Length: 355
Image (tube, rainbow, N blue to C red; front, side):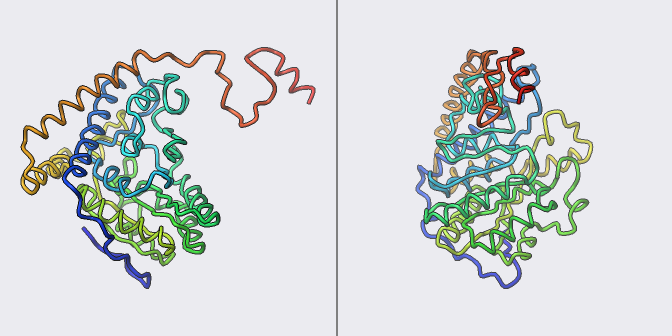
């Protein structure tokens, strides 16, 4: 990994402050473990019928979310795709509220209306969770342009999958971001498969970072299974954008250990391939770093796992015991300016016919 983009675009130099204190590294480790256990518990709840719809798990990709999002400031904007649980946790959203959202409970981050693919939080400048592949990329460019127009030192990070780079909005977004020198970091999580199709069967350019050359945007490919490598690259990219240089593009090569969704029979890849990638498990890899390089005792890391287990017990209890949205709110939050006062009776239809 570590390839830099081709073309005439200048490249960002190494960002300052990449030497992390051991406490920060331990925080990264705990976040990764929490994301993994959150997803494992969500899978169990889904199989028990407690979660409806589709469930796209982030197991195996934890290093990307934790490493990249840690490079952002609280005032920066973050938008992502429908595999969004790990990003929300890394951004600081309460896991209890997130699990409640999966359960469709009123205590969820979207009051139970968004579900798995539509996590969001105004407080955290976390604007989704978008189910339309690549549909959030123009929004990210718009947010970045607005920040530049208003003179705000904000950066927008847009996270998307490899399949999103084969649609029109992707190229349009890169083009406008480059024209406007918008402070946006494009982060592609290349997990090698767009749903059930291998990238080399769907894209004429399998090395995604090279696609950024169409807009002369500096780009690099990084190891998405290494949280420290992701964080270092994200710091470079964010600093580049915040300094007024325009957009930056990162391709994090990673792998999802689960199927596209929990319902995916995974007929398009072999068990041998999955096991090969599991040898590079980002959590185990980072654990070895903490033990061998930082000298952290195994018992201290085991204690982190135990602490996460206790937290997850509370997360599941909160989701189970939270109330469902009340029936009288069924038609709320559909329109920004609700039409009439319909709560399921004929008065709305009569008013509609009169207008």
